[in-house]
Length: 149
Image (cartoon, rainbow, N blue to C red; front, side):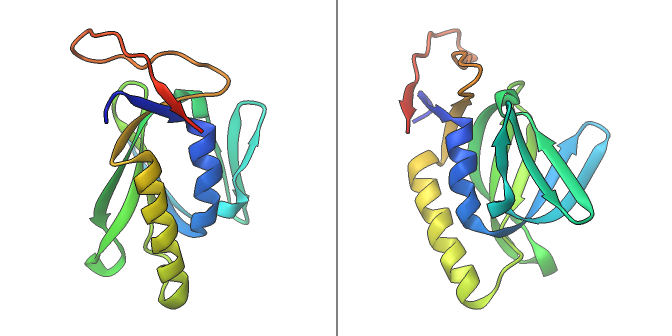
C-alpha cells in the first residue's frame, strides 16, 4: 500500500465530515492545540485555512508528504483515533485527534473516520494538486503514484 498516493486537498476536503476535533500542530520547538470543527476548512490559493474564534490555522497542503491513521492518548487518558499528517521530510506535524465528541456525534464521526481509513490508510503518500511531485522512497526506487480521487 505504501506505493499509493492521493491529493492532499482531496483528503482535507473529506476530513470536513469529521466535525469537531483537537488539531495538534507540532514542530521541533513544541506544539499547539486548537479545538476546531473541520467543516470550517477552506482551501484557497494553495492554503488550507481553519478560522474559528480565538484561532487561525493556515496549513500548506503542498508541504505534506504522507498521512497515517493511528490511535493516540486522547482526553482523560483514553485511546482516541487520529489522523497524522506528515511533512514531506517525514515528521508528523499535524494530528487530528477525534476526542471531542460523544454519543451519536462520536458514532457518526467513527463511521467517517473508518471510511477515510479505508480510502487513505493505514498509510498513504500525499501530493498537492498545486505541486505534483512524486514522493521519494528511502530505498531509491522510482514510485509512480496511482492517484486516488
